[in-house]
Amino acid sequence: MMKREILILRSLLLIQPSKKAIAAIVDKVRTIIKSAKAWKQEDLIKALNPIIKGWAMYHRTVLSSVTFGRLDWIVRNMLWK
Image 1 (spheres, rainbow, N blue to C red):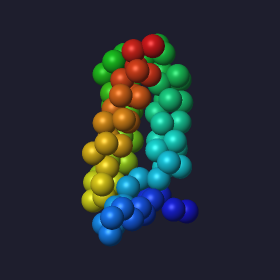
Image 2 (cartoon, rainbow, N blue to C red):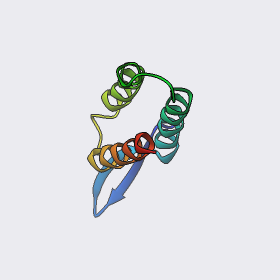
Image 3 (cartoon, rainbow, N blue to C red):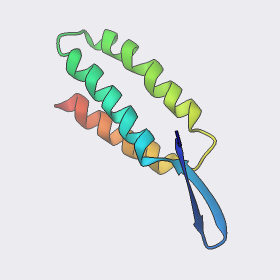
């Protein structure tokens, strides 16, 4: 299973998280948030933190700052609703 995309742009090798990996983490976070409607905020943070942190640690060595920002925006919107 490929978790990273390799892009070549003007003779630069750019490796970033794949769309499939981003969709997987978004789905995982979405299911936790939907199942935790009645949880305390502290319990929800304890559940989400290791998942998001682990995904970020796995993808930290590649070009992923834009992806991290997008993921942050998606999770923030999920929590707001």
